[in-house]
Image (cartoon, rainbow, N blue to C red):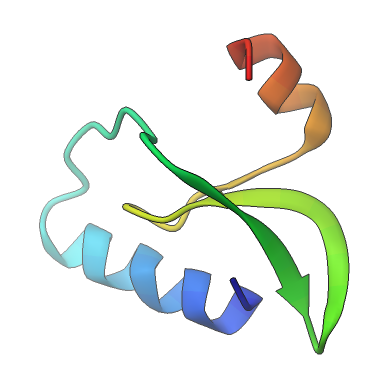
Length: 58
């Protein structure tokens, strides 16, 4: 998922009142065609580093 698309998801999620998200599905994050090394929740748009994903057990 492109970073700009993740940011759109984040804004839409905030407009819904930012309810809790279980982050059911993740996608690789890209910025200008290159991988950032992070993954993005396809539901709320939150970005997670590799370290954060390890802490989450993913």
